[in-house]
Length: 180
Image (cartoon, rainbow, N blue to C red; front, side, top):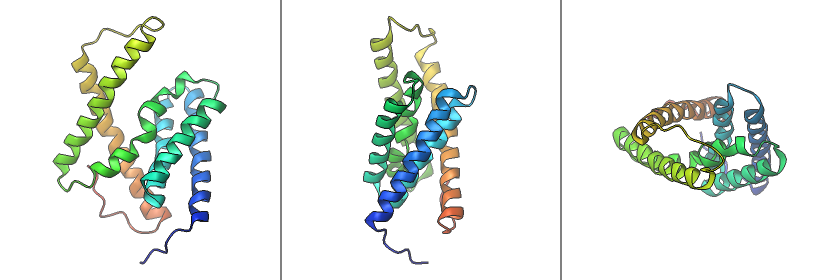
């Protein structure tokens, strides 16, 4: 089925809807105990929707707007850190990484990008907040290994949600998308 080109009006309206929904889930992620990361993961789906519908620029703009409005509107700024530092923009590197045809190559690239993000985050966290917050003294390799396993789980769930979007919202059938 041939898709009609998206008008600028459609892209702006979709961006507004995705931004509002992302903020709702981000707000919930800062207040609902126990499922914070789940709500941030769902909020990141809207960045993926914008990447699918409008391209990388639309996804990046949605992420930037969600972070900015989240910091303005949501009272618990520190609780937004997981969304800002990882969940919110993961759809953008995921888009490029999944152009690799080999599943093993995709997984290796995703893990490498995540380890880079995690190392930069841990170093930055320790430098900026070292005096205010004490981190447990777990070996860095254990933190990286556990984080990588959680990344692969999150990425699998995000791919599942993107497939759901293709099947149910776009009515294109997401059967050809790989879950890797």
